[in-house]
Image (cartoon, rainbow, N blue to C red):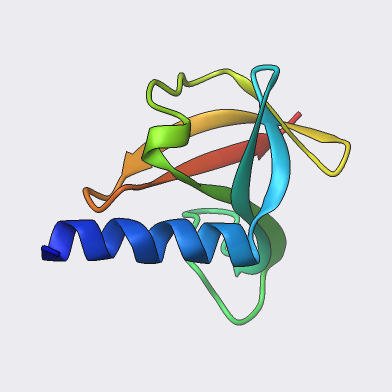
Length: 102
């Protein structure tokens, strides 16, 4: 089995174990959601020790599960709606969807 196939198996296992069921544009998929806090400088957006707090919601999905994601589409996680604002495929079969709360 080649490296690409092994990577795909690992990705599928990680998403299955650590993921949760979410809805993307009305379709249910499993993805890993993170909504970590960070503190930013309100003037330039750079990370700081003090400043304003914000969250960075992201969702990692298997690229095969969401082959053609679209910016602006609604993603529902635990009853909270977000909008896709950026799509970042990593080339290994995982796509990071950068979300924005509605």
